[in-house]
Length: 429
Image: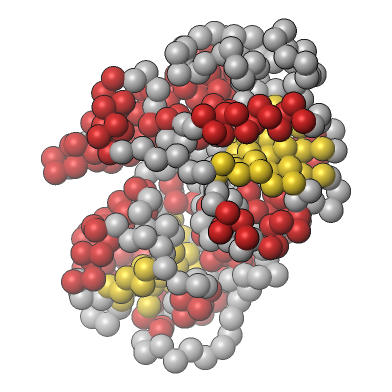
C-alpha cells in the first residue's frame, strides 16, 4: 500500500516515547509498503537520519513553528482550542500536506498524535478546526471525493498515543491536592475540558482510531458516546525491540549497585516530573531510613528545574541526557515507576521489562500493559506501601531475578514490535 504518515517531529533518533513508536511503525512497515513521511524537522536533523531515510520512499519536512509563552498564556485564556491543538500550528505544514496530497494518491493517511490532527480534515482548506472545535460532522467514508478539489481522500487513521484529556484530568486531580501546585491544577482543569471537545472532534473525523491500551480505548469510547456518533477504535499497544533491550549479566563497576533504583524518561514531561519529585520527597526518605545507602538514579534528557533541584538531596543522582539508557537500567537492582498522572502505555517500562528488571510501580505506571501483579511486577500506590515494597526487594535478590525473568517472558511473547506492527497491516486491510 501507499502510506502517508504524519508525525510531530522527525522520528529519529528514537529516544523518547513518540519517536520510538513512530520509528518502529515505519521500520517494520517499510519492507511491505511505500511510506511517505511528513513531519516537522530541520535539514540538519534529516541529514543525520540515514536509517530513517532508508525506510521511507519520500520524506517531506516543514520548519518547527515558534510560539511565545505570552501567546501561549493568552490562548489558554481566550481560545476554545486546547494547548495541544495549537502547539504545532503552521501554515507551512498545512500547505505541505495539501501539496503532497495533490501530488500523490495514498491508500492510507496515518496521523500520529493529536498535535498533527489539525492537518487532516475532510477538506483541508474549507474546514477550520480553530473556528469550530465543537462542530458536529458525520464520520468520513473512504475515498470521499472533495467538492472543492481534484483528488480523493484516502482512509484516515488517527493513532491517539494517549487519551489526552485523561492525562490532563489526572494531572488536575494530583495537583489540586497541593496548594503550591494550584496554578498547575488550574491549567490542567482548563486543558482537560478543552481537550474533551477537541479530541472528540478529531475522533469523529477518523475512519479508524488506534489506542495503545484498553484503558485509553475505553476513555475514547466514552468521549464518543456523548456525541452519539463514533468511529471504530482498535487497540494496538506500544512495543519494544527485545533484541536490543536484553538482560545484562555483566558485573558493573558501579558501587552499591545492589542498593540502586532507577527511573528513565524525558524529564521535562510533567508526569515524569511529578513522579520523581513525589518519590524523592515522600518515598525515598522512608527507604533510606531502613537502608541508608539506598539511592536512585534519574535518567533522561532535559531535566526540568524541579528535577535538577533533586541533586541536592542525599541518595539522588540526575544524569541528564545520556547516549544509551541501557547501562543505567542494567546497573540498578529495582526499576521504579512512581507515576500518578498520565495515560497511554509507557515504553520505558516495556524496555525495563525486556531487560529483565524487577519493577515496582503505581497502578497508573503500568496501565495498558497486560501483566499479572505479583508475578510480572509489584504494584504499590501509597508512599508507605511503595517504600516497603522496594525495601523488601532490595533485601531479596532472588525475588528480583524471578520478577525480571517473568517480565522478560511477557514482553517477548506479547510486546515485541515484530508482533505488534502486523496489527496495523490487518487494520489497513
